[in-house]
Length: 401
Image (cartoon, rainbow, N blue to C red):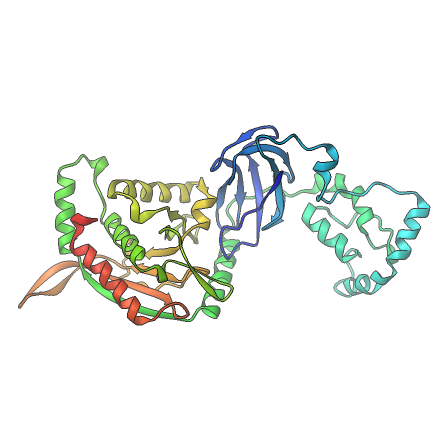
């Protein structure tokens, strides 16, 4: 038997709101199956299960908001028996039963040391309901309004034992889950980017890449295919970046607990602007291994699902490096902010025609500025320069992508 906990979908997520369960107790589960939809304040995500088994119990209800790491469901192995009532309750805090007056009096006497904490809450505002810190935390987690509850603690403070009476109030007063909250997303993004600039010693490099060979190859490739099978230049750019990352593992991974861990694969994040404002950066899994048509299909699919709903938790939580491309906004160059705990952000600007030297002559070719923001704790400018040169080299030989 194991608990399935609210997963973390990035450094900027500390809690999630359950929007809908996709399964019910007794259902057989398979690794990678979507079992719930969760709102992370940035986007609604489909949460996948990471093991085969049987759903034994749902531990939270639709509309509940819980911290990352909180058990939200219990899963048993296919060979395990269903939990008994006692086992199902183990480890989960349940509302306490009403107790006799004498026992309640003894509980109140035990809470005398809480008086200082309760008094402190009173100074925060005359209208705030007195409650012990533990009761206040549980009430917040369960969505219980403390105001109408009678308290058995010092000065009428609400204790854990009093919360059972608040279950009906919580059910009646639970707020409906609302739609996209752009203000909440801006706060979430601000927190993550502030942390990035505070903790990560960024350094920046940029290079202008001649796209003449890529443009010529792409035109020939697309001329032989129906519109539905044609490629965009973005697919070549993303594939070149992914392939280069595979050769430079120091730029493809995570910095956690004062140590760098290289990614086991290249899961290339792609920053996508959302129609309601803000952005999200889901990953193209194993991007360096995908053929160009498959990569193109995933690019289109991710953009569609990011803007309409249906992204999976594995796509949000797994990027090993991220690309931000603002060329469609008319930006010649972009220097991104690294998304922790990643260590690199690649920026792609607007492809445009520029004068370039071709041997001893001057020509006008399609070109693009590609930048790198990297973590100086992990690598330096020498390696970053080699990485950008590798992207350039690959784009000069598009037939190998």
